[in-house]
Length: 234
Ligand SMILES: Nc1ncnc2c1ncn2[C@@H]1O[C@H](COP(=O)(O)OP(=O)(O)OP(=O)(O)O)[C@@H](O)[C@H]1O
Ligand SMILES: [Mg+2]
Image (tube, rainbow, N blue to C red; front, side, top):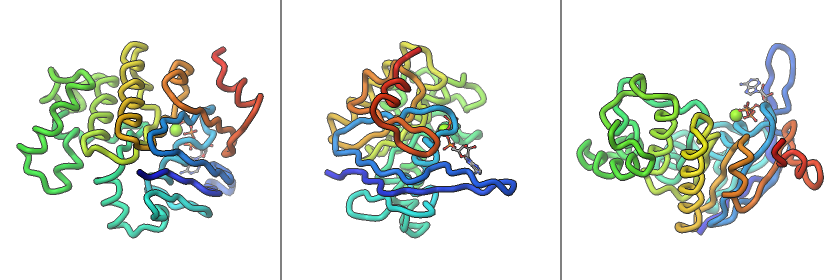
């Protein structure tokens, strides 16, 4: 059982002569079996933090530890293997392959890992069913609604039985009932498998599904009353 440990993470972007302090010194630990929300306004650094946890972006300073390794210092090859075998990542913008069907998009990590097409589809099918897309297996992303695309991206994240879940607004395009189902599914996976999970969200309804809420503002974690006010639905 492994924790995800972020320590003193910093990422500043330079754009048009300006420095954006997107993540400005964040430390937090997500324990095995813990499902936490990363909550905060647009631009507060949530996606940047998640990309660093996935090894998709190198921090300017600080460490990302998972399973005794510093994820931010993995080689390109080892980073790719980490994401394919160990991480379930849901991108805010889905990143589905336009020319591939829903089932093949869901099966992507298995195909990249050497599964035959037939066996990858056998593994992916129950995950498409879990997100309610059995009837849409052979549709390409263009033939799916935004919410359906989002659910394919969720199935793709779960298909490799990840040891770490990192999800960026995974219900941003879903209605309230579907959002609840997905939040419950992600929470149950973390609890049942004893894996750490992060849910980036703006949705106050999500809070009842998580074990803990971390609130971000301007690249920093905020605590106490400020966090409470930020997480209270308007
Ligand atoms: N590649 C980049 N170059 C320059 N600035 C960037 C870049 N990516 C993000 N930023 C800036 O960094 C800050 C944090 O961005 P980030 O995407 O992490 O926010 P977020 O909390 O995920 O927001 P949202 O809720 O809108 O998705 C923002 O102010 C954004 O404008
Ligand atoms: Mg974001």
